[in-house]
Image (cartoon, rainbow, N blue to C red):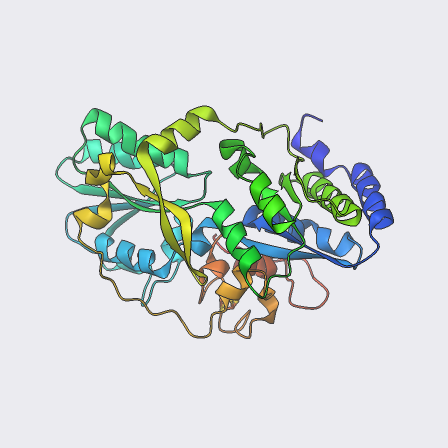
Length: 377
Ligand code: SF4
């Protein structure tokens, strides 16, 4: 198969589903790590086609959702400063901080701009030498390499007015934290294919062995997800726990060596707080000593920021697979895409947004309609 449509082929999907139904003998809980997979599952109704013994648990793999409140508040503080041109991807503008969001900073006169690449932010810095241009660098192993490249280029070209507010996170420590939780119900993981296309599969065998949990590297189209489920269930039923690559068209065992070299040059591993979850040791990246001059946290001295999470938001439980979005009392009432309490309702990869967008309100889903259905539009 070469084209996207072929990975949505209903006949092939039925064949995979038949095999999954024929293999399952008891209940299993599978966690899809990535928010993109969550949206694909809910959008295509994949969870409703699976045997009722299989539960898909939504994991923490949404970069906007897991960016800690403290970092959002630091972004708000920096973006409010005179002379600052603050750049971010679009989703981040509506993520609520302790008291406001980046849109409100812009409405109050702050120069907050949406960019589509960190290199666009670097270009703005070169075009505006009298301004401080700051890029909000968030996300997993997928967005970290281009952000590392932007900092590397800023150093190489000598762009002193460019800096980055870095809040990058890594998947393997999050899997470890989930497996160590006393509430953990996960029997197998559908690992995020795009993360592995960068990092390869080398970080996973130790986790699979230590926690005796199958980890299947999985893509994002319906057949990718069904194949990930099929392989996970086959392992679970056979009592095996290995790492399998069900996304070979994008993932090689060694990943992307050039991207990994760029990460190793610019970043170093650090402990990182995850929004709603807490600090996970070794789960993030920050700029290494060589590039510290480009660190916006130091440049703008925003280390000490106090934060206030909305008490009603249960995104932390959603992100750990302990609660389905529609089980949150605020879902669809006080919390909607237009009035979000948490980042999981804002982000285009957020689980709460997926449930709202595809009308998973706890009963029979009905097709989404109208503008309100678009969580980021
Ligand atoms: S529905 Fe809203 S309040 Fe509830 S967990 Fe999701 S983002 Fe938070």
